Length: 288
Image (cartoon, rainbow, N blue to C red; front, side):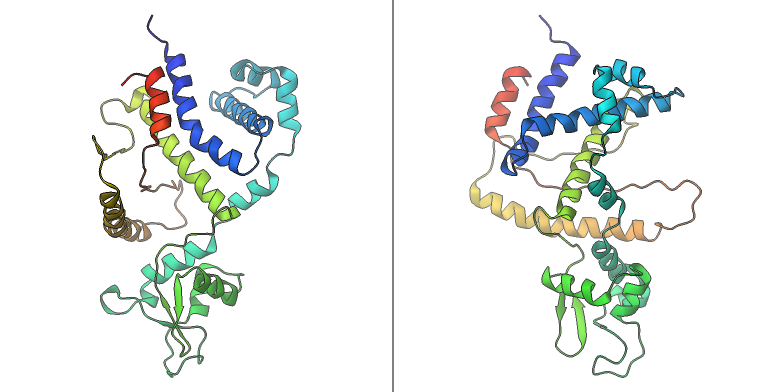
C-alpha cells in the first residue's frame, strides 16, 4: 500500500527532529516541555494562516486548523511564554554588527579595502592622526553600548587583537558566541528555522520549475577517510569564508534603511556529517 503524503511527512519529522531532541535531552528539556513548545508553534501557525486569509483568528478557528482542544488553545494564548527569549530575539547582536562595519565601512579601511588598525579613542595610540577610532565605530554602529565592553568581548573571543600600542587589529569578520549562550541559541534557532523555511517555500506549487529559493547540496556517495574529512573541513572553511565575504560585501552596499518595503534575506553555509543511525532509521520508513 502506498504511503500517504502525511505519513511521509511524519517519517521525515521523526528524522529531522532527532538532532533537536538530542540537544534537548542534553540540556534537561523534558518531553512535556518540548510538547508544549510544539503546541505553541501549531497555535501560532494556525493563527497566522487565519490572518493571512483575511479571517478573524478565533479560538475555535485555531482549534480546527491545529486539531487542538479549545481549552488547549485558550491555555496557549493566555500563557506568557518565551517573553524573555522573544524580547532578546528582537535585539540585534551588536558584535557582528560592529565587525561588519569595521570590514565594510570605507571610513575604517585603508587603500584597496585593507583593514586599518584602530585606536580605541582619539589620542590613545602613539600617533597624532585624527582618523576614525574604535569609539567612533561603536558610536556609529552600536549607539548606546559601551565601546569598552564591546572591545573586551571582541578580544575575549579572538575577533580583535590588542597591538599593545593603543591600537587594535580585527582578526576575524565573524563573531561566534559561546556555546549555549542566549546568542548562540538564537543563532541556532535562526539557522535551523531559515533553512526549513527555504525548504518549505520550495515545496509550494508556485515554486515548481525553479521558481523557489536557491538550494544546493554537495555530498559524498561512498564516504571519505577521517584524514580527508579533516582536510575537507579546512578546505571549506577557507573557501567558504571567501564566498561569504563576497556575499557580505554585495549585501552591505545595499542594506540600507528607508526602503518602503524592506525584505530581510541572506545565505546560510554549513558543513554536515551524516548520522548513520538516523539515516538507517529513515531508510526503513522512506526508502531511497
